[in-house]
Length: 337
Ligand code: 13P
Ligand code: SF4
Image 1 (spheres, rainbow, N blue to C red):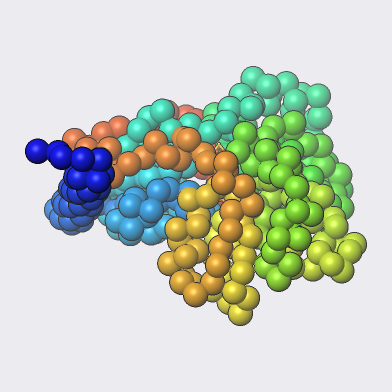
Image 2: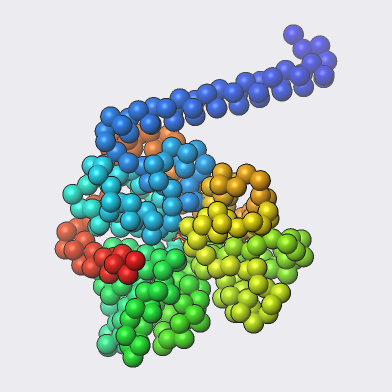
């Protein structure tokens, strides 16, 4: 019986503690079930750096788009559970057509991949005969099938450098990554006007305020960010920007592994903070913007990952003719490394 307000608050706190305890218990049990089921089914769980912490913790491999494609190509497992977004699972299926690739939620799409479709690409190619098409991996399989090379944020510059110098390049779909690659290579590149809704907004965050608040921090910036081109150009021009680094998500991880710095400001999707904190628990990590959350990446949960393993749902299979043509630019990308 509740006698007074104090009792009520005490009981409420107890109830909340209990609820949290039960939730933790449920999550731990789910994680154990997932690990058991994974062994039983000879499955491998691949998770992108933006996945929620619970999903990253049960994965066999956590990485960026390039690392995940490489893992999909190398694994002996017959079943791949792809904890990421749809185009990434499509890429895994194209690379490993004999394996079953599952995604726990089919709605996990990508706003950037949606900025160009295959008809638009064909029209662009017709307007630029002889040009070489470089597609960022954040594209549908059909768009990849009409491309010459694929690239990720970690290898865009290297891929463009591997193309003969006299060739015009059509780069798609991310305009910020395109501008970054153009500035780094000095090549004749026409850029598609696409952007990711999460990274584009980073351009609205005051970079100067962040630098004032964290004068000693390293600034790790994803090249898809709306501020990346400006930051990259500044970092080359102004010495006060020397601690600005433009990295893919895995590039950020590698930098933190090697760095002695104890403070980092991270400009990309906030899911990566979980992995960064695990790598270096002594350093402090700050999100450039707490609002940098990709709702598509967050559609994957421990519960739907468990269901995906149990019921072998939802298979991502690219039609054979498209898969064959899309494999060529992906293979070319993988062979550059
Ligand atoms: P990475 O290739 O750096 O992992 O980036 C993928 C992505 O979707 C960024 O938004
Ligand atoms: Fe796509 Fe942007 Fe989400 Fe990356 S963060 S998966 S580019 S919507």
